[in-house]
Image (cartoon, rainbow over all chains, first blue to last red; front, side, top):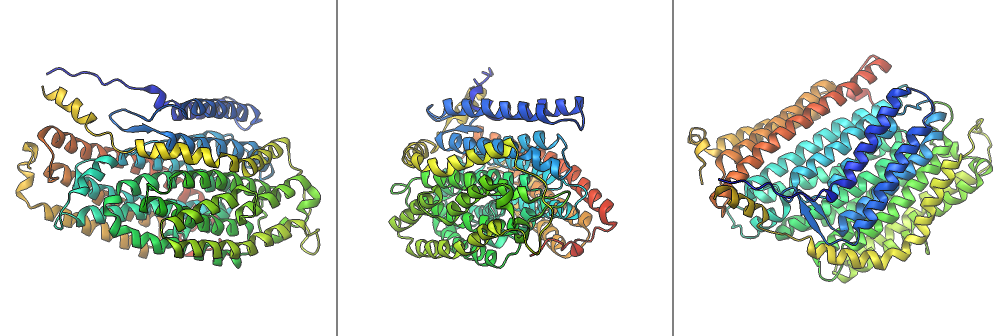
Length: 504
Length: 122
């Protein structure tokens, strides 16, 4: 019996290894100089992220590949999603310093924890193995539980951490139970294998994988905040420190939708069992997200509900893709995620300027007078919010247009109509936020202290560039992910071959 | 197909194990919903994770998946058992973080009843 050590292509794991290593270095710096200036930590973190970004850009043109016994997968879809995550994290770091200082929670631990959460998200999108997906999800989530409770003197930060933690652990139990049944039905954790196994099932053996897929969708639906599982979202978005909320809103959603896309593609043979359910979930997510956001009095909470609504739009894009992968491309989802990350992180960055002392001023009246204090940032806030509404020529408009057309092309006309109506409804609360920022300080006036720093300005500019220029990438994203989605389909037999070598 | 490691285990029908797993999972789920102390809620989540582990091990031992040859069946069994290790490790990490959060809350308000946690609202 001779065992050949399988060759490993390390370049596939290099991006997230680099991010995790940067986190470790940042933590060592913090240990050496506790509670001092965080400038060095930020510098190291941003350098690491920039290196990862460049590395990922060079990998964008490479053909799809797998390594570690098919556990790690790199295709254009995964590289693009990783790029979004890395860029969003870098912007969060840029505006975090001033915010953390203002709130007197300037621990250096924020940076390493966020980097590790990022590495979890990157693992999640660059695999089609359920074990890896689960491990990535937990790396992301456990770090986020800590980050949500980072403001330790603030009861609502702790409360949001506990809610997030308990509901997150509850949801991952569902995800795991689902994985167990998919494993039972196919004997494998790998999504292509599962797809193959469920294709040939008869009436008697079907209930098990169907049950499994449903439970996995519950678990991922929680992460993506789809409607029956969305209750944590507004609470956690409101209670967590604003820079953490920005990270969570962008990165965690990208990772969740990346994983959801892979699971739905693998579950395509069981289409008839889950499609109807997700169809109604998409409608409910769009409507409830937007309608409840209308009556909110807290900006972060309203943006939390808005992120639920955007999850609904993204689900429409995924449903259109799974319904007819030949007619529409997964690129719509990727493109919308690019735009969503840019506009959400930007909006939260500007909203973080309303923090005063150890209090997180996030009610609408706390934004009053923002224009006088930070005119540039406020104008940019208008840009981000118009993109969230979907006003041309922002990326929000083109993203929604693509989803709308995809839905029409695949015969999901009701979803397209609900999407259009919801976009119109959502304008109301986004406009409310805009107006609040331009009202001069009256009545509820309170002394404001902080002027936006250089990091904030740069971060906001990056997001603005994303919102304005990402539209140009639309065609490119559509094209690359079209080929990627085809080639990412199963590469069967490779693990099997290794096992045959062992048995010989 | 039966695996040799599992001959003794498999004298009991698979449905018993899966049934026990399901009962444990549901008990844990009900516990999460009705209990008010976060520590107990978290214990209920652990119960659910144990149900998951039992289910994984059952499938690994029984290996009832159709259409696999012997080599892949062995590998499948290993897959299932490996997953259990990961689940346990992750659960341990979650406990560490979770208890830390509960401690932090207790310091702030000397009370950890989840029903009283309602400061986050509109």
